[in-house]
Amino acid sequence: MTFDYDLFVIGGGSGGVRAGRLAAEGGARVGLAEEFRMGGTCVIRGCVPKKLMVFASSYGPAARQARDYGWEYEGGSFRWERFRPKLQAELARLEGIYRTNLARAGADIFHARATLRDAHTVALSTGETFTARHILVATGGRPFVPETTEGHELAITSNEVFDLETFPERILIVGGGYIACEFACIFNGLGAHVAQWYRGAQILRGFDDEVRGHLAELIRERGVDLHVGLEVERMERREGRIWVKGSDGREDVFDQVLYATGRVPNTAGLGLEEAGVRLGRWGEIVVDDYSQTSVPSIYAVGDVTNRINLTPVAIREAVAFHETVFKGNPTKPDHENVPSAVFTQPEYGAVGLSEEQAREREPIDVYCAAFRPMQRSFIGRPDRVLFKLVVSQATQKVLGCHIVADGAGEMIQLAAVAVKMGATKADFDATVAVHPTMAEEIVLMKTPVRSG
Ligand code: NDP
Image (cartoon, rainbow, N blue to C red; front, side):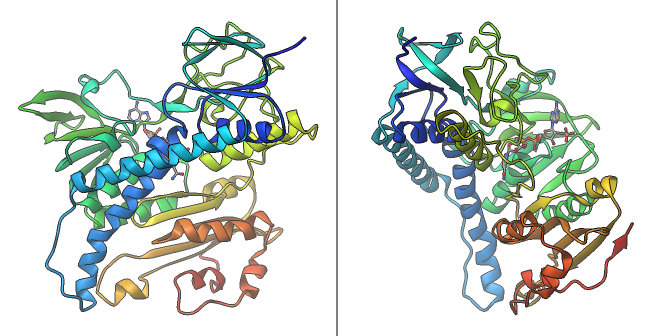
């Protein structure tokens, strides 16, 4: 049987573009359809614009601290209307790079929505139909907003937040996960009044309990009005603003309400089930260890499979798919010890197990140091950084490393190499400290704070 393409990719995000580019560079005939903008969530409305906003939000507090270090500083305020066009221009530049690299590799790019017709056929919204030996679904995910809340349609999500016409002076952030915590800190740093309401007992469910408590304290200290055990009961548009009633009876008014209440896989209306592709409970595409779906010619990578929803993981899955399908080298993407960072202020970097997860598996020693770093104690700031190692008693291997500090995202990347290599506590101890740094504490912790 002959096909129009060796590979047809649905979705131009991190996973889809990487797989398409590798296959095309290797000589395969590749088509890729993207209905929105090339680059996907990460580039267009996720990691990249978020990180640029994190940078923007760090200068206000830094300038105020500079005064305590002896600088003349007369105050100042953030101008969204100055920042926003620069942000949009940067995203357009990056989108162009994605498009160019893929086209240069020889792939055909279609600005269209693609749906599956059958195991080897895709139909485009342009009316075209193509056959392909392999189809890769990499359609990512989208924000989920609980529609049970009255007035939910007044809320924005991370999809809209980068395009706001005006800067919200007062913003409510709903949720306690990565996105909620990051945007609470971003808007706080940019000078908005920020309230964050989370339904559970502590933010960042699933992460290390001690760290969650520590971070919540710091987020509050830096000015976010963070409440746990609080949900939105009702929202109404009143005099151009949003009136919100909380589950504890409180009422408040905000310029914007940002819901960061999770993301769901983009699988609706793609013809997946009709083509025989099995979906899971949350609508995610069910794949095996090689990212193959229940239809042998159809594969899926990235957030649409709801494994670990991070850009670098989607890219690894795409590379493994390429090795498996186009290089005859069956490769499983490795989902063990994936580091990640929550870009709050301060940041939280983590790799491996939390104390709670580790203790469920085996007896452990916990090493933890929380202290005021030199840079902050000099100016009388109360912020404390936290360094924590979770160590197996039996093997002495470091099972988890957790860092809360400015720059923790950068630090955890390096600590993750050691953890991934199976470093023991003795290996950490044998490493000479870099002095004076905050991170030296990671090799200086001598006595466990808890064992068992
Ligand atoms: P998360 O799953 O991290 O958090 C969702 C939050 O919304 C949780 O606090 C959850 O509460 C709450 N929630 C869910 N449903 C409801 C509801 N019906 N009513 C009220 N609250 C609700 O999702 P995010 O949207 O923050 O992020 C999605 C994913 O994107 C992350 O898991 C991560 O993989 C990725 N990401 C990674 C980033 C990074 O690496 N820095 C940054 C941003 C996103 P509960 O805990 O009670 O369930």
